[in-house]
Image (tube, rainbow over all chains, first blue to last red; front, side, top):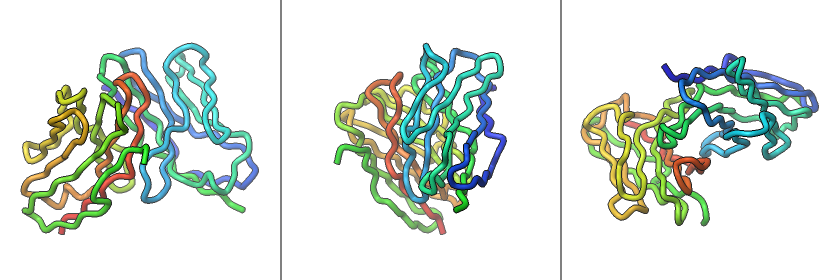
Length: 114
Length: 113
């Protein structure tokens, strides 16, 4: 079955520290992979996407993610977290033959300590 | 504005009432998606349109849920005889085509009393 797992429900990091949010997927087809961020009461904002090519992708707000096919992972990283990064982060997977339908993980809530 | 617009932002209804949720996609976007997001969960796919054609409705939870996009632009998600378990945020997303990233609206928070 197709699924996305975000093992960490809640993570707290200090401002200025590095961040890594984990995402593992199970998908039969060649996947498209996304990270979205959601602030309270808001919709989802796209941080970055992987369709093909270079497995290290750069996104907005200083985020990057690395696609590792052998580990079925697409972890999100940021070298130095800012207080404004506190939000809910969702990993999602789709495929060309699924008509764009996305399957989301349950999300990781990020808190930032001053 | 240039983004996906959803209305109303908040809707409170009594159990058994019918509700209609509206989505205005980004102009020119062919693909339109509806997702349901329960509290503390990730969004779950409901249905997908390409222009006016509903190509996938596999995620609709029951026959009480109905979506349409008659002119290939604005879409309406209708829920008949609402139940408490329908309480959730309903998110609409659009994309230039099905292989492009989806842009999300701010959602409609539906509360069924």
